[in-house]
Image (cartoon, rainbow, N blue to C red; front, side, top):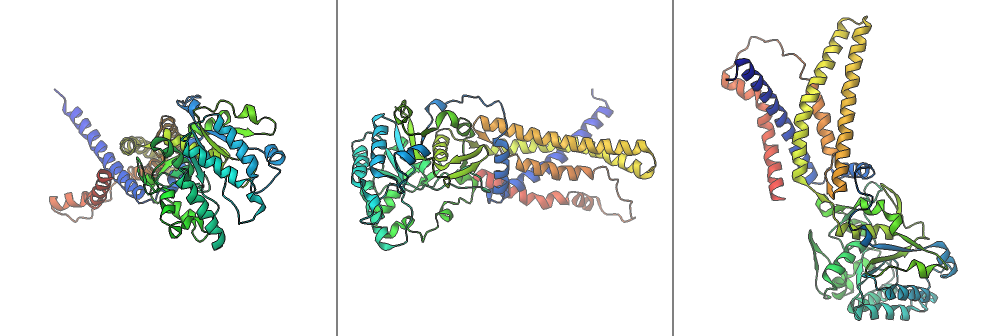
Length: 473
């Protein structure tokens, strides 16, 4: 038999557990609603940037890294001596380089360089026919999929027609095209729009689905990715991405986080063993061991093509390769895990901060009653320091836990938890405040019950709203 004291204690604990659960449920519901409508994108970016650089139990040699895409970057010496610093790049040397890459029998070739011709009669067009013939022959022969980035947008009608005709002819030969753009969150490359035909995404689809028909859209596990060549086939009016009148950054912005995937940090951690900077006189040995690998060809000499990441600056071509690797080894956002962790952490935080703030407030009250006692001052400051230290420890633990999840290809944003901890600590700090003195006014038991639970009645639509979003999305 359980004694009355034990029953009273269990009832008391159960009441507090239920109270903290309701608070955590309300906070989790608010976070879920805000996240669904994209209002927490900034917080997700901050958390991902912080968590991404934390050292965890992530293996130094993660699974699949040996077969990861290889960025081949044209270095300064190669650019200056072999390409003779020509801009656009010398087409004859590009043809020789791409021929040598194709001879290595890679799995796929993605080129992050504008290979399109310039205006009619331009000196930079020398060797363009040979380069085009190589690209078309490689694609038509089925040797390997070829993915190019679209030409730089132009403003004049005559040059637009040149670019459009060039893209159209290569599309008809089976070459695929993509956008060269990258999405930045707070100036840092951390995520990519999974449903936009950027280079890394299209390169992944080129391997998994092969070259699509010119009028066919390709499907991604998250939805439909528009095929650039399908737009080209519809005519010049549909090729607005070749014109400077279209601001591509506005097209690529994904309002909802479910339309963006985090870049897998495993790739960026291992860039030094994957990336190759092509230097004059060493091209032969630097192109070895490419058989069966996905190759991304780009430039290293152009400092403008550099983007900041949580792991430091990287060239755009390397980030496209990282996106391609992320498509093969995606980071999944586990909403169920996030919800459970929010609820559990909210309950735990309620108990911990309820106790610690009660001691802190009690010590502060004694200090106010005895301002001349050093012991009272020391006790109040020690409890306050303990409260802040526990808060810091819990936040570090949250970030570390998210880093561990990230190392296992799972992503849970600890940012909403941090907000929950902060709000919960404020609520807990009020728990030691004594009840107000009765005024003599009395109400019925039903009215008393309604008033006591009025907060939960007002918050119940929030929980219902969040539940609908969670179930339907």
